[in-house]
Length: 286
Image (tube, rainbow, N blue to C red; front, side, top):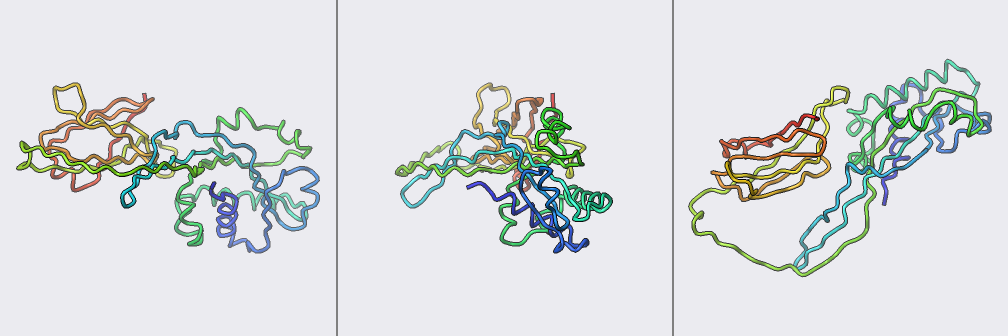
């Protein structure tokens, strides 16, 4: 089931507008036509879902595997959707200054998104909210789809609007259950040598985002220096997180690659130190 983004946005704005007496503000989710604006009886924030697209860059094709008793259950990964909203504000007295004040308060709440989960949502909605991300004024979408022609198409006088892109998962209720096969491999040559686990995150630096970094869904190859074939190969999840197990101390290189980024090699000379902390790998765009 898709996360109820409408309710999360409404609850969030009700909290951030508390200093303006948020109880006196209505929220609606209808097409903002001229007829709608003329029927407004209280200060109103309209949150209209204009378009939905799949985010192909976050697409995952591999099923997620879990173990239950003697069964292996493989679940279809969620489909990541980009949901494009337009937000507009209305005054019950057609007071332009009041509309602009409400408009500005909505913007302040959106640009304070780094406090989104902790301060402005109830316990019931925090878990779902942590699965979504926001982008205010996605420029490419605005250039291609928005402008004065939007207001003309819905028979409305032009007014300021906020374009908001919400990226959220659509959970797919499809699973495959098979019997678990137990196997064990013994390598007597390495029984006296320690094996390590390594986890970390692949990111890239974006200067105009709240935290200056975004995750990269990269491919990690564990290599021995001088050899062409990888020992292990894993893919990062949508948050850039990866895990490697059964690493021998003599393994010394990670090969990190992602489409649109420069490939990076990371030396693993001090495995004991690296495995005691999470490793952060920063990729540069091509």
